[in-house]
Amino acid sequence: SEMVQRLTYKRRHCYNTKSNGVKIIKTPGGKLTFQYTKKSRKSPVCGDCGTKLFGIPAVAPHIMRTLKKRQRKVSRAYGGSRCHQCVQARIVRAFLKEEKKLVKQVQQKQVEKKK
Image (cartoon, one colour):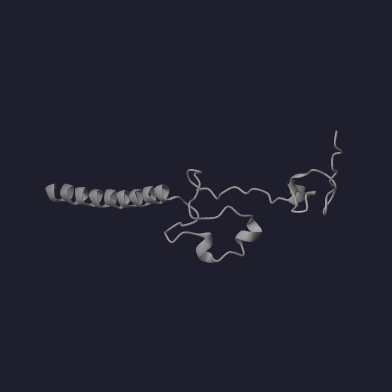
């Protein structure tokens, strides 16, 4: 049986924590070494319905701050905060509220005319 190659961490501490994640790779020289992996990040979600927001990268907050404004949001009302369906629902709701007010006014005028 062949001897197994031992591996040691190159940096950080010697514990297998979330921030010290590694994967074993084989170098061109045939040695095994640790390659440090980045944490996988969650995509930003809609504040109303909780679905994934498209067009916005899943990166760490400190990287998100360094991105350009156009990369942090989409060019739409509530872009980068709410999904397109929720924005559509908000617009329709606002429109219907205004319509309801107008209908009320018209009905009041009709009642006043009858008197």
